[in-house]
Length: 283
Ligand code: NAP
Image 1 (cartoon, helix red, strand yellow):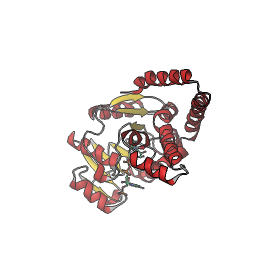
Image 2 (cartoon, protein in one colour; image 1 turned 90 degrees about the horizontal axis):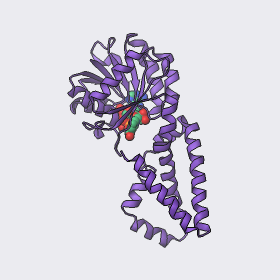
Image 3 (tube, helix red, strand yellow; image 1 turned 60 degrees about the vertical axis):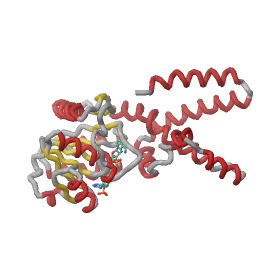
Image 4 (tube, rainbow, N blue to C red; image 1 turned 120 degrees about the vertical axis):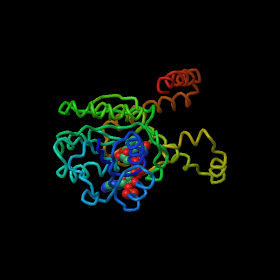
């Protein structure tokens, strides 16, 4: 297939590396010229440019374009490229939120099918691109009732070929599920970091920083990540995120009450429950 990737960063670059190794011809588009050049150099794309006209290939009949820009640029990108592509071209995306993108995107392109690879690293940009990033990781295909079924099956086969484990659900269901395991943890983890910083005794705060080890590194990792990504996720998945935050508030209040009243038996039961439930989330 001829495949286009817009947004040559961690996800777009990694996708390009794997798609090319499967024999697809891949063109790329990104915001910076140096990124385009680097993407060609590392073999993530066959050629790349800042715009369609600069690609120097016949892009009109591209089979599939996958938009891998930051969330805020996904819809503007689809709006900009869709009129220049054949009506048969499938457009997809990899954004971490789906409802806010799917409905407007379907108005811009007849063959839009959204998706979300549940894979990543702590790094960003084309330099962070790596092969086999999606192998054995979940990929969520998020069609709506209007989606072209053939386009969905092409997307499914493509991600299967990259080694991903495919799930399919509506954009709304995706956003509710991902709020629990991805978006809520970002805010809880950020809250943990901000709470630690409230220690009023400077010497104790300093000692805590010196003693912080693997446990704190694990629990603070997602909260200490890219602030812009966290904000975009919250803005674009506000309803589901708020619902999960309110549930979390109740659970936290319950734990506070158990500690405050010295109800150690109940606290241990809560921790025992957490210990068992956690196994359900360990893939
Ligand atoms: P990233 O490493 O920052 O890559 C995004 C790239 O897009 C940037 O390097 C930038 O390249 C380019 N870009 C920015 N604005 C653009 C525009 N208007 N037009 C064209 N290119 C543009 O981010 P990422 O982690 O790959 O995330 C990309 C998407 O994947 C996001 O929508 C995110 O929600 C989703 N996602 C991320 C993860 C994750 O764990 N990171 C996982 C699943 C899904 P230049 O260098 O050219 O500026």
